[in-house]
Image (cartoon, rainbow over all chains, first blue to last red):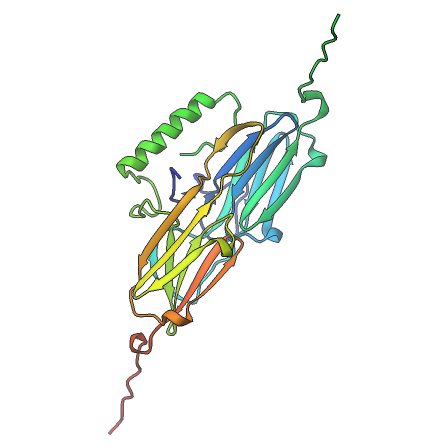
Length: 130
Length: 147
Protein backbone atom coordinates (compact mmCIF):
# COMPACT_ATOMS: atom_id res chain seq x y z
CA UNK A 1 0.00 0.00 0.00
CA UNK A 2 2.70 2.42 -0.96
CA UNK A 3 0.49 5.01 -2.60
CA UNK A 4 -2.70 5.55 -0.75
CA UNK A 5 -3.80 8.88 -2.13
CA UNK A 6 -5.86 8.61 -5.25
CA UNK A 7 -3.92 9.71 -8.30
CA UNK A 8 -5.54 12.42 -10.30
CA UNK A 9 -5.14 11.77 -14.00
CA UNK A 10 -2.12 13.73 -15.24
CA UNK A 11 -3.69 14.94 -18.44
CA UNK A 12 -6.26 17.67 -18.05
CA UNK A 13 -8.05 16.24 -21.03
CA UNK A 14 -7.58 12.57 -21.85
CA UNK A 15 -7.78 11.37 -25.45
CA UNK A 16 -11.28 12.74 -25.77
CA UNK A 17 -12.50 15.98 -24.25
CA UNK A 18 -15.12 15.39 -21.70
CA UNK A 19 -18.34 17.32 -21.42
CA UNK A 20 -18.69 16.72 -17.71
CA UNK A 21 -16.74 18.85 -15.30
CA UNK A 22 -15.21 16.42 -12.83
CA UNK A 23 -11.71 15.22 -12.00
CA UNK A 24 -10.54 11.92 -13.43
CA UNK A 25 -8.32 9.50 -11.53
CA UNK A 26 -5.74 6.91 -12.50
CA UNK A 27 -6.95 3.57 -11.17
CA UNK A 28 -4.43 1.23 -9.56
CA UNK A 29 -3.73 -2.00 -11.46
CA UNK A 30 -2.01 -5.33 -10.89
CA UNK A 31 -0.84 -7.10 -14.05
CA UNK A 32 -0.10 -10.82 -14.17
CA UNK A 33 1.33 -12.62 -17.16
CA UNK A 34 0.97 -16.37 -17.58
CA UNK A 35 1.82 -18.57 -20.56
CA UNK A 36 -1.74 -18.27 -21.84
CA UNK A 37 -2.84 -14.74 -21.03
CA UNK A 38 -2.36 -11.36 -19.43
CA UNK A 39 -4.62 -10.72 -16.45
CA UNK A 40 -5.25 -7.18 -15.28
CA UNK A 41 -6.87 -6.43 -11.92
CA UNK A 42 -7.97 -2.84 -11.43
CA UNK A 43 -9.53 -0.95 -8.53
CA UNK A 44 -12.58 0.93 -9.80
CA UNK A 45 -14.66 1.65 -6.68
CA UNK A 46 -18.06 3.17 -7.37
CA UNK A 47 -18.22 2.12 -11.04
CA UNK A 48 -21.35 0.28 -12.20
CA UNK A 49 -20.69 -2.44 -14.80
CA UNK A 50 -22.86 -0.51 -17.30
CA UNK A 51 -20.69 2.61 -16.87
CA UNK A 52 -17.42 0.85 -17.64
CA UNK A 53 -16.01 1.28 -21.14
CA UNK A 54 -13.10 -0.97 -22.16
CA UNK A 55 -11.55 -0.72 -25.61
CA UNK A 56 -8.68 -2.56 -27.23
CA UNK A 57 -7.41 -1.28 -30.55
CA UNK A 58 -3.96 -0.85 -32.13
CA UNK A 59 -2.39 -2.64 -29.15
CA UNK A 60 -3.76 0.01 -26.85
CA UNK A 61 -6.08 -0.91 -24.01
CA UNK A 62 -8.26 1.87 -22.61
CA UNK A 63 -10.27 1.57 -19.42
CA UNK A 64 -12.73 4.34 -18.66
CA UNK A 65 -15.09 4.02 -15.71
CA UNK A 66 -17.69 6.69 -15.22
CA UNK A 67 -18.54 7.51 -11.62
CA UNK A 68 -21.79 9.23 -10.76
CA UNK A 69 -21.42 12.04 -8.17
CA UNK A 70 -22.35 10.93 -4.67
CA UNK A 71 -23.70 12.85 -1.65
CA UNK A 72 -24.26 15.97 -3.71
CA UNK A 73 -27.11 17.22 -1.49
CA UNK A 74 -25.10 16.79 1.70
CA UNK A 75 -22.66 19.08 3.44
CA UNK A 76 -19.05 17.92 3.14
CA UNK A 77 -17.34 17.90 6.53
CA UNK A 78 -14.06 16.10 5.97
CA UNK A 79 -12.33 14.72 2.90
CA UNK A 80 -9.36 12.52 2.13
CA UNK A 81 -10.12 11.51 -1.45
CA UNK A 82 -11.97 12.86 -4.43
CA UNK A 83 -14.76 11.25 -6.41
CA UNK A 84 -14.56 11.18 -10.19
CA UNK A 85 -14.10 9.03 -13.27
CA UNK A 86 -11.31 6.50 -13.66
CA UNK A 87 -9.23 6.56 -16.82
CA UNK A 88 -6.16 4.62 -17.85
CA UNK A 89 -4.47 3.43 -21.01
CA UNK A 90 -2.00 0.57 -21.40
CA UNK A 91 0.19 -0.25 -24.38
CA UNK A 92 0.06 -4.03 -24.65
CA UNK A 93 3.21 -5.53 -26.13
CA UNK A 94 2.03 -9.12 -26.38
CA UNK A 95 -0.06 -10.30 -29.28
CA UNK A 96 -3.56 -10.58 -27.90
CA UNK A 97 -6.46 -12.52 -29.34
CA UNK A 98 -8.83 -9.57 -29.14
CA UNK A 99 -11.92 -11.66 -29.87
CA UNK A 100 -11.44 -13.63 -26.64
CA UNK A 101 -10.94 -10.75 -24.19
CA UNK A 102 -13.24 -11.08 -21.19
CA UNK A 103 -13.93 -8.71 -18.32
CA UNK A 104 -15.69 -8.97 -14.98
CA UNK A 105 -16.43 -6.23 -12.46
CA UNK A 106 -17.13 -7.31 -8.90
CA UNK A 107 -17.18 -5.19 -5.75
CA UNK A 108 -15.34 -2.43 -7.56
CA UNK A 109 -12.54 -4.66 -8.87
CA UNK A 110 -12.14 -5.24 -12.60
CA UNK A 111 -10.66 -8.57 -13.73
CA UNK A 112 -9.65 -8.37 -17.35
CA UNK A 113 -8.39 -11.45 -19.20
CA UNK A 114 -6.40 -10.91 -22.40
CA UNK A 115 -5.64 -14.31 -23.98
CA UNK A 116 -2.51 -14.51 -26.10
CA UNK A 117 -2.72 -15.67 -29.68
CA UNK A 118 -1.55 -19.23 -30.33
CA UNK A 119 1.54 -17.98 -32.19
CA UNK A 120 3.10 -16.28 -29.16
CA UNK A 121 2.31 -18.93 -26.55
CA UNK A 122 5.47 -20.69 -25.43
CA UNK A 123 5.64 -24.20 -26.73
CA UNK A 124 7.23 -27.02 -24.90
CA UNK A 125 9.30 -29.24 -27.13
CA UNK A 126 8.92 -32.89 -26.28
CA UNK A 127 12.26 -34.61 -26.02
CA UNK A 128 12.31 -38.23 -27.03
CA UNK A 129 14.69 -40.63 -25.44
CA UNK A 130 17.03 -42.04 -28.05
CA UNK B 1 3.85 9.63 -11.07
CA UNK B 2 2.52 6.35 -12.33
CA UNK B 3 3.44 5.62 -15.88
CA UNK B 4 0.38 4.58 -17.79
CA UNK B 5 2.39 2.70 -20.39
CA UNK B 6 3.08 -0.90 -19.72
CA UNK B 7 6.44 -1.99 -21.03
CA UNK B 8 7.52 -5.52 -20.29
CA UNK B 9 11.22 -4.57 -20.34
CA UNK B 10 10.81 -1.69 -17.91
CA UNK B 11 11.18 -3.81 -14.77
CA UNK B 12 14.21 -1.81 -13.60
CA UNK B 13 12.28 1.42 -13.96
CA UNK B 14 9.46 -0.21 -12.03
CA UNK B 15 11.83 -1.05 -9.20
CA UNK B 16 13.09 2.54 -9.09
CA UNK B 17 9.52 3.84 -9.00
CA UNK B 18 8.62 1.44 -6.24
CA UNK B 19 11.60 2.52 -4.18
CA UNK B 20 10.73 6.17 -4.68
CA UNK B 21 7.11 5.52 -3.68
CA UNK B 22 8.31 3.74 -0.58
CA UNK B 23 10.55 6.71 0.30
CA UNK B 24 7.64 9.09 -0.26
CA UNK B 25 5.55 7.06 2.11
CA UNK B 26 8.25 6.87 4.77
CA UNK B 27 9.02 10.56 4.69
CA UNK B 28 5.46 11.69 4.26
CA UNK B 29 5.95 13.59 1.05
CA UNK B 30 2.64 14.28 -0.62
CA UNK B 31 3.63 16.83 -3.23
CA UNK B 32 1.42 17.50 -6.17
CA UNK B 33 -1.52 15.66 -4.76
CA UNK B 34 -5.04 16.81 -4.51
CA UNK B 35 -5.31 16.08 -0.78
CA UNK B 36 -1.86 17.00 0.54
CA UNK B 37 -2.85 16.42 4.17
CA UNK B 38 -4.39 13.00 3.62
CA UNK B 39 -2.83 10.69 6.20
CA UNK B 40 -1.05 7.49 5.25
CA UNK B 41 -3.94 5.38 6.44
CA UNK B 42 -6.19 2.88 4.74
CA UNK B 43 -8.97 3.21 3.86
CA UNK B 44 -9.24 6.90 3.12
CA UNK B 45 -12.47 8.41 4.32
CA UNK B 46 -14.89 11.19 3.49
CA UNK B 47 -17.56 12.55 5.84
CA UNK B 48 -20.80 14.31 4.93
CA UNK B 49 -23.81 15.35 6.99
CA UNK B 50 -27.39 16.39 6.64
CA UNK B 51 -29.74 17.43 9.43
CA UNK B 52 -30.44 13.88 10.57
CA UNK B 53 -27.30 11.84 9.84
CA UNK B 54 -23.57 11.69 9.43
CA UNK B 55 -22.37 9.75 6.38
CA UNK B 56 -18.91 8.20 6.36
CA UNK B 57 -17.69 6.78 3.05
CA UNK B 58 -14.63 4.70 2.21
CA UNK B 59 -13.47 3.07 -1.01
CA UNK B 60 -12.70 -0.60 -0.32
CA UNK B 61 -12.61 -2.33 -3.72
CA UNK B 62 -12.49 -6.11 -3.58
CA UNK B 63 -14.00 -6.43 -0.11
CA UNK B 64 -17.34 -7.95 0.87
CA UNK B 65 -19.49 -6.31 3.54
CA UNK B 66 -19.30 -9.51 5.60
CA UNK B 67 -15.49 -9.28 5.71
CA UNK B 68 -15.54 -5.80 7.22
CA UNK B 69 -15.68 -5.18 10.94
CA UNK B 70 -17.33 -1.91 11.80
CA UNK B 71 -17.58 -0.64 15.36
CA UNK B 72 -19.01 2.54 16.84
CA UNK B 73 -18.04 3.32 20.39
CA UNK B 74 -18.85 6.75 21.76
CA UNK B 75 -17.57 9.22 19.20
CA UNK B 76 -15.21 6.74 17.55
CA UNK B 77 -15.85 4.77 14.40
CA UNK B 78 -13.56 1.83 13.66
CA UNK B 79 -13.31 -0.04 10.34
CA UNK B 80 -11.18 -3.19 10.15
CA UNK B 81 -10.57 -5.83 7.56
CA UNK B 82 -8.10 -7.62 5.38
CA UNK B 83 -7.68 -7.24 1.67
CA UNK B 84 -6.53 -10.48 0.13
CA UNK B 85 -3.79 -10.85 -2.42
CA UNK B 86 -5.02 -11.92 -5.85
CA UNK B 87 -4.13 -15.58 -6.31
CA UNK B 88 -1.38 -16.42 -8.76
CA UNK B 89 0.08 -19.88 -8.54
CA UNK B 90 1.72 -19.36 -11.90
CA UNK B 91 2.87 -16.43 -13.96
CA UNK B 92 4.81 -13.24 -13.40
CA UNK B 93 3.63 -9.97 -11.89
CA UNK B 94 4.43 -6.98 -14.08
CA UNK B 95 2.69 -4.47 -11.86
CA UNK B 96 1.44 -4.64 -8.30
CA UNK B 97 -0.02 -1.29 -7.39
CA UNK B 98 -3.17 -2.30 -5.55
CA UNK B 99 -1.77 -3.40 -2.22
CA UNK B 100 -3.17 -5.95 0.19
CA UNK B 101 -3.03 -6.92 3.82
CA UNK B 102 -4.73 -6.11 7.09
CA UNK B 103 -6.00 -2.63 7.76
CA UNK B 104 -7.67 -0.83 10.65
CA UNK B 105 -8.79 2.74 10.88
CA UNK B 106 -10.37 4.70 13.71
CA UNK B 107 -12.09 7.97 12.93
CA UNK B 108 -13.20 10.47 15.55
CA UNK B 109 -16.74 11.61 14.80
CA UNK B 110 -17.48 15.33 15.09
CA UNK B 111 -20.70 14.85 17.07
CA UNK B 112 -22.71 12.35 19.09
CA UNK B 113 -24.43 9.56 17.14
CA UNK B 114 -26.99 6.93 18.05
CA UNK B 115 -24.79 3.82 18.21
CA UNK B 116 -27.73 1.41 17.99
CA UNK B 117 -29.05 2.77 14.72
CA UNK B 118 -25.87 2.84 12.65
CA UNK B 119 -26.24 1.22 9.23
CA UNK B 120 -23.63 0.18 6.69
CA UNK B 121 -24.08 -0.41 2.98
CA UNK B 122 -21.52 -1.72 0.51
CA UNK B 123 -21.92 -1.30 -3.22
CA UNK B 124 -19.42 -1.55 -6.07
CA UNK B 125 -16.54 -1.43 -3.59
CA UNK B 126 -17.76 1.69 -1.79
CA UNK B 127 -18.69 1.47 1.90
CA UNK B 128 -21.22 3.99 3.18
CA UNK B 129 -21.94 4.13 6.90
CA UNK B 130 -25.01 6.09 7.98
CA UNK B 131 -24.84 7.33 11.58
CA UNK B 132 -28.01 8.99 12.92
CA UNK B 133 -27.26 12.05 15.01
CA UNK B 134 -28.39 12.07 18.62
CA UNK B 135 -31.22 14.44 19.37
CA UNK B 136 -28.94 16.80 21.28
CA UNK B 137 -26.59 17.05 18.28
CA UNK B 138 -29.28 17.98 15.76
CA UNK B 139 -29.73 21.62 14.90
CA UNK B 140 -32.69 23.17 16.67
CA UNK B 141 -34.82 25.68 14.93
CA UNK B 142 -35.64 28.63 17.15
CA UNK B 143 -39.10 30.01 16.67
CA UNK B 144 -39.04 33.77 16.38
CA UNK B 145 -42.23 35.43 17.48
CA UNK B 146 -43.30 38.68 16.00
CA UNK B 147 -44.63 41.16 18.51
